[in-house]
Image (tube, rainbow, N blue to C red; front, side, top):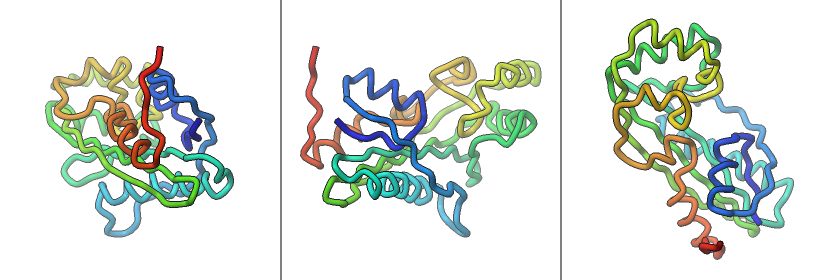
Length: 191
């Protein structure tokens, strides 16, 4: 059993899919970037802070946390403030490629934080204003970094993915398995 320091239903679903027993205890950390902080460094810092904050309250078992940032032209596209911000982000991504960086951190019961980061390149199809408006109207983009969910209706916006699809969803499973193994809790295939 591990603790998942996230309220993300996608992350819970992915752990369920693999049969990794977990309890959800969301982390509460300030997710704003620091002055001059690079996107990958920000993702790693936030994942580590989330894992540490939950581990400090519940240190008995490993605590898994993650943070995802979407980056285009050096700009971090976080979760949109509102529908207008989502439309702006989607128009920026339209017909272009961008990076999705998902850092994963695992706080071991002894307090050591193990961390890794996955970087995946995603290409968007060219989107008409009508497609953007229709997608935003679904509400799906409003709680997602970059204003889209590749695992939902947003899949139709994506032309291709180069890298870990699960990293784009918010939890690169191969890195999770690597961190669990490094912490002495290797993943085991079960029925």
